[in-house]
Image 1 (spheres, rainbow, N blue to C red):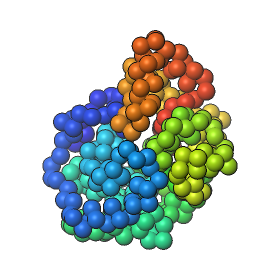
Image 2 (cartoon, rainbow, N blue to C red):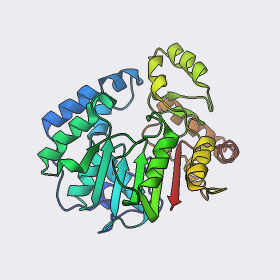
Image 3 (spheres, rainbow, N blue to C red):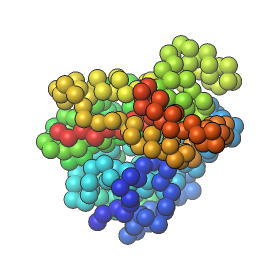
Image 4 (cartoon, rainbow, N blue to C red):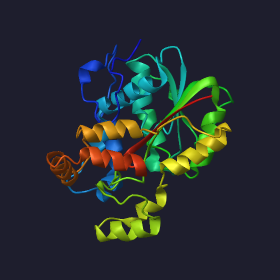
Length: 310
């Protein structure tokens, strides 16, 4: 079964819900939603006052359908493949793919002492939907409990910035990937103008010590920055070159897609109103092509996306 979607689908601007087909509906219980909201209370507190409701996002199934569309556009048809999600969170993507799309997918997520007990909460969702508890495995990305050459597709969405050691996670992801398999990485770029956890305007390549001063000046909790890895195209390129043994990585890391969206003034729903006003002004002044050009020079894409074939 192919998940319907256009060739250029991406997580930020895909909005046509009719493009996703499904066989059965995933059941979201009130108990599960309450646990998600409780777990994300801190995340909500560091975000902007008018930002998205994090609890709602974490239980919005269309959000995860967009991810599956993006994954399939990157990797090709997923039916019949053995798939691993690194950092499965509350288990919504794995559960949705299993129940509605019939995909053979498992996830790995750390235990209760990390990430608000998301692994334990995922078990509530799996049980409510009659899905095997082994669909989400307790473990860390730096030391995954799977044999080498186990999966046809290994992927992560917005996870590398949260792990203890991004290079080790990438090495493990590559280890468990079968020969000719596909590794797909989607990670935030800290060499851009927006920070998605705080939902604030950002300065490209801001060092962490200065970032702490900046978020404090914005009235936010600076301590959360200690849990984030400031990933950019340069360090991700270096890590992938090391794990693959390749002198070069054949990818634009999502830059071309970002440039197209900038030229067309197509901004994702996550972008604050202040940035939207600036883009509208830039569009009126005919500056968006220049912004896209400069972004190409300095690698300003909002999201790093890369496909690696083993």
